[in-house]
Image 1 (cartoon, rainbow, N blue to C red):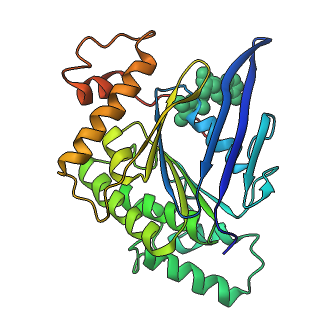
Image 2 (cartoon, protein in one colour):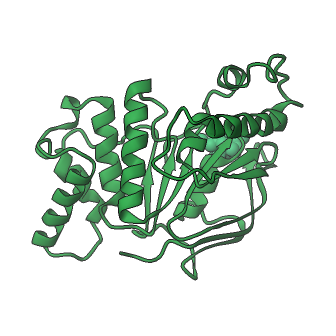
Length: 281
Ligand SMILES: Nc1ncnc2c1ncn2[C@@H]1O[C@H](COP(=O)(O)OP(=O)(O)O)[C@@H](O)[C@H]1O
Ligand SMILES: [Mg+2]
């Protein structure tokens, strides 16, 4: 295990240059994530969620402020930060086991240790029996399980998930949410999950962060005190979803008025918050 997974984000600001002019994408983001916490982030498309995850991952180091994991400043990608994206990004010419093993490429383990760890993580995500399958034989949900195994196989302190279930059907999404929660509880890994689905954010998170766009910043945070396992039909969760939704709607109301937002918040948000900002890295 790489560390405790205590993440500290201090005054992080980020600008891109677009056609010679600066585009402020993140403005003074402060966030502290406790070891083993499950933090979820929602925000309108384009508000900088993926950019923030890229900075935490160390994939982009041109920013102001500090990202510190377990007391060490993040200056480059590292095995102590696992990543899972919306699409599984498996190599089609490698089997499930070989794809998962890529997460251990630089881990300095013996061959036997690696194959043991790969098998353990394939079992952890419920793919035992499919280790020798090639990606084209997998359903979308199975492929995403393999991607989660690859993100976890090196036992990172933090797992960063960028809309990991965004392209899955509702039933598979619900199953994988429960699986992820089970893995999180069993492994004690800090998780940061970006989603555009408020229901998902509230169901999974210990805390939900709402980001506002233009430039991206933290607009509100909500504690989710409900014990686990959680009941999706719990009225307290539904009430919290409404509050998160209201905060989310208010972040975008200047740009995109949602006439029915107050009466039908869930539908309103789904209608005008599609995730379009995803970009491969
Ligand atoms: N490499 C880049 N160059 C220029 N602009 C970028 C780049 N990456 C992201 N952006 C811009 O930064 C903003 C935030 O993008 P992103 O982090 O992908 O948002 P989100 O994930 O919340 O949808 C968007 O306006 C996007 O167009
Ligand atoms: Mg994104």
